[in-house]
Amino acid sequence: MTDPIADFLTRLRNAAKANHRVVEIPSSNIKKEMTRVLYEKGYILKYKFEETTNHQGVIKIALKYHNQTKQCAITTLKRVSTPGLRRYSHVINIPKVLNGLGVAIITTSKGVMTDKEARLLGIGGEILCFVS
Image 1 (tube, rainbow, N blue to C red):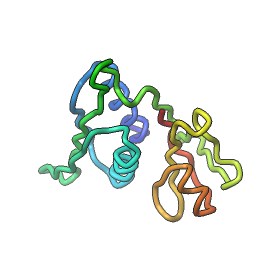
Image 2 (tube, rainbow, N blue to C red; image 1 turned 30 degrees about the horizontal axis):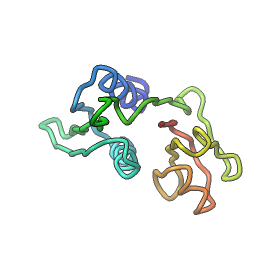
Image 3 (tube, rainbow, N blue to C red; image 1 turned 30 degrees about the vertical axis):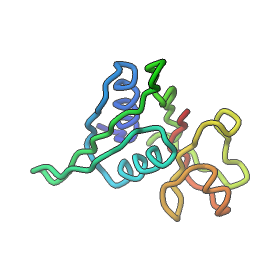
Image 4 (cartoon, rainbow, N blue to C red; image 1 turned 90 degrees about the vertical axis):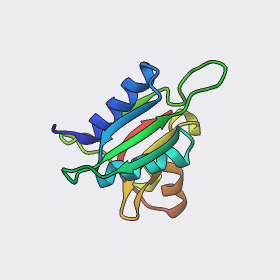
């Protein structure tokens, strides 16, 4: 697997389209931080980090669905920066997702955060993905 973050996003996207309640994803530190951001912004219901025998671990994510329409809270997940073409942005040029309704997940020198938090801190970084 050459791009673990793209695999993370693809597993979430596929689980949402298949209306699964829980998805299991191999763990890494960046994936844990991305999961934390998704939880804080209300895109997932809950998550749990579990250790396995191979010491890599697994992230179990419970997806959030609307009660009446049964539609997943995550409608689009788009990978921006890839291993072949990294996308870095200065704080002035950080894009807004759906005019501020969506979230861009950015990795900065201060850690993984949303585009709004990065603008408040006045720092730029690598744009990992767009979520809406």
